[in-house]
Length: 169
Image 1 (spheres, helix red, strand yellow):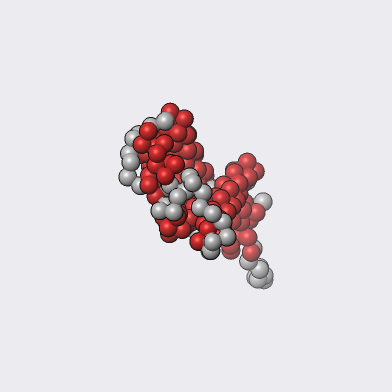
Image 2: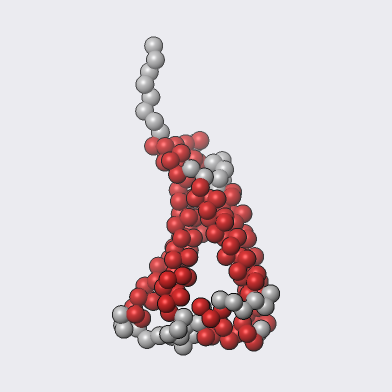
């Protein structure tokens, strides 16, 4: 006699998402790392989209700022490796914690920046000197969506990893 089994919701969620979010998070991280490596190596294109303070320190090649760029580039490479590791559904609590941590940090950073920039546009908050009025549209139309997309990709990859992990338990 054949018994009908109800599908496991966690397995269905993991299967529906597929691996594209983890691959997307990896590509996002690698592209962002490449930009940081470019700026750390002395590239100047795009520094004005961040704000006058960043543009000035990038142009002056201040050692502390250059070291920060190298460090963030390496962290973005670690994030790319994390994204690929989230493709594997084997239970690893540290990987799960790292995936959700990256998703939360990226998402919170993006939402906080977007909220601040929208408050500036609304006239509720003054434009910080480090940002400058000329860089504000770049943040709203480029950088805030970039950070939001990274947070979303890591969130979806972590959801898939969690679903695969729970279905194998």
